Image (cartoon, rainbow, N blue to C red; front, side, top):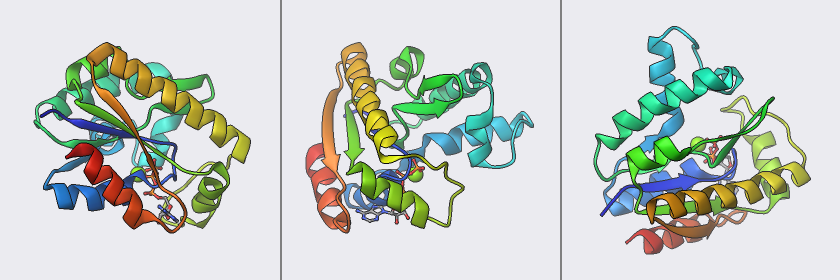
Length: 182
Ligand code: ATP
Ligand code: MG
């Protein structure tokens, strides 16, 4: 039984769903961004996680690889991450080949929701410094995340599943997630 990778656009509710599902499954959640932040802090590059995506892509790739190695050493965990990250240079893959091959996931779970609902969740979330994005851009981003999941599956043999996290339906999303992974 291998690692489970969870992706979805920022604000879709990955962390919300995964933390509860992990408790039911008795698995540890590793937030990829937090692993990367630890690496970046040690190198004196950033202080906060929302500064990470503003680093140049070359630096992000180096930090990403170091984080993949520490995650791979943890055994079967749930990895909370992103299929693609928006940068000024375009969509940066969250799980490029060298990360996919180090983690060797068993399953990639895509958490998805209605783009309008996601835009509203971002606006309401005061715990984070989030970029504003129109619903049509969120829709495009979710499309790219499906392509990312397909690519990871093709590289590693992992299965791909979609979990819908509809507005006010976290319980259903958690149940769906647990069923998919069990
Ligand atoms: P990021 O990739 O930036 O870490 P995320 O996908 O982990 O984002 P969360 O932080 O889990 O997103 O959730 C974003 C916001 O959406 C939070 O305020 C959360 O309470 C809210 N939220 C999550 N799921 C739902 C839902 N089903 N209905 C309504 N609000 C939700
Ligand atoms: Mg999160």
